[in-house]
Length: 362
Ligand SMILES: NC(=O)c1ccc[n+]([C@@H]2O[C@H](COP(=O)([O-])OP(=O)(O)OC[C@H]3O[C@@H](n4cnc5c(N)ncnc54)[C@H](O)[C@@H]3O)[C@@H](O)[C@H]2O)c1
Ligand SMILES: [Zn+2]
Image (cartoon, rainbow, N blue to C red; front, side, top):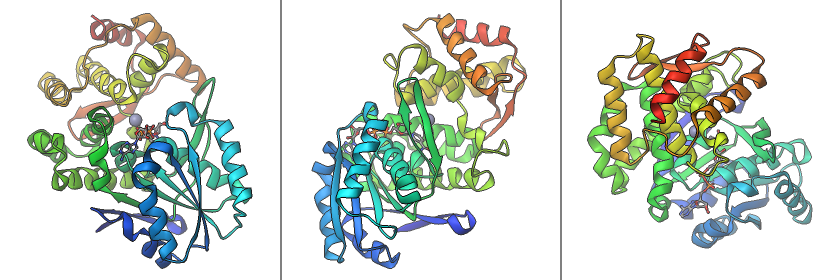
């Protein structure tokens, strides 16, 4: 088992990464002196696969565990499920010393974390992420929340878990589509902070694709280290430093929103957004063309899209404008200077955005 510490003063916490260690989570919960009552939040699919093991381990360690199941899917990262979970908290008689554990992907983590951050003004929270995306991204950094019909992640808070416990073995039951969702963010980490890591992903892609756990271990560990460092420098996204994690997400979100979240998954949209940002930087003279080709090559080798099909360019620009309105200022982009280094800028002209999107949708 490896440990990566997320250093946030009193809110610091460890991320444990290991193999086949779900059955030992009860021991770790005991070491953390968690209160006796635990509400385990999971979705039907994940509970069926791994819930039994987690419950048995916690019960063996003396905890009193109740289960709250949520149907799988982003549509259930909602206020109505939040209310149902509050009801489960009441039924299970959770008190201020109790803990909510989220066992699942990013949907479960965000939802369970939001309930933990608000029930009784905050109870302890633990994450057992079970998708690659959740292990490399959503379980680190403390953003929790739910969607509204009007948009994703519109209600939420910053709330750090007591610990994150990532068992790599559970990734074996993911579909390849789900693995790719995580890999898009892994490529992002290489692009924003670590050229060597980017090169390692290029070289080890076949092992990663085969879910060789040694390779996956390194990919998850390095991703968590990078995200932790960025979050440590700007926990609440107030200093302009955490925004670099949005590399690929400006155009990415616009692609997702303008197609009603139907044409592309989040990971695919982020791949498109990274290519869009790289092309903008290339045209502004910041990012050399061979580097754009290298990024494109890696995304294609993973099987992520690098040109936009079936979504209207004007619609994407419309969605970008909406983003601008929310911020009440110019549209911000995270652009690459080289592989491993990005910067935040508000200096991208509307004309250049239009040209880049036209090229991407050709
Ligand atoms: N909080 C953050 O900082 C942050 C960052 C990135 C993404 N997110 C959020 O994460 C969510 C997406 O997360 P996701 O991609 O993990 O999707 P998800 O949580 O919807 O999980 C995807 C599917 O995989 C299934 N599943 C999960 N683990 C499995 C396993 N080990 N084996 C087999 N099936 C499994 C689930 O039942 C579900 O159907 C979005 O809501 C997004 O907003 C949050
Ligand atoms: Zn993302």
